[in-house]
Length: 199
Image 1 (cartoon, rainbow, N blue to C red):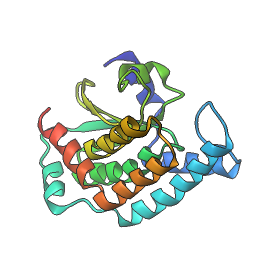
Image 2 (image 1 turned 45 degrees about the vertical axis):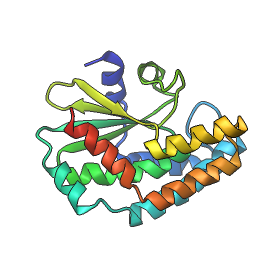
Image 3 (image 1 turned 90 degrees about the horizontal axis):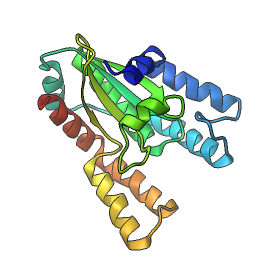
Image 4 (image 1 turned 90 degrees about the vertical axis):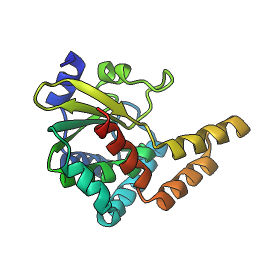
């Protein structure tokens, strides 16, 4: 096992622990991460509401549930996240349900800013984009693959907007949230299951 992965696992949170950490910090008027600002706190509050809703409404399709149960090994999904990250708020509730549903996956979450060494191993276009799901085989501790920071459709949406307008602004952030709402977590389920089946 790579040392940064082992270190991160040692300091990781379960999904309920992660949710509690974000909530507790919000009560103190803070967000997770090294940087503190009104904007980041505001995004964390929005994400808290979003995740509460998704925890209740998010469903794994029967077909995907079956595929997860039929995985031939036991895994850890180590997810790099932060409470202020809009994509993480949309994706973690799905990833959590998938892990529970499988009976073969343990979900562990770590903070990006506290795990710089790990983050540097999983950059997206040289950027520290999150969330990133790192697939670790439980028995051997080997890193088998990774996924993230967002489903392909959402990535195209952001890239096309950036190409046309040259910025990531509130308009495209709203469009992205609407994309997630319409997609109902299906792209995420399919892309991650695809990765798991092709390991």
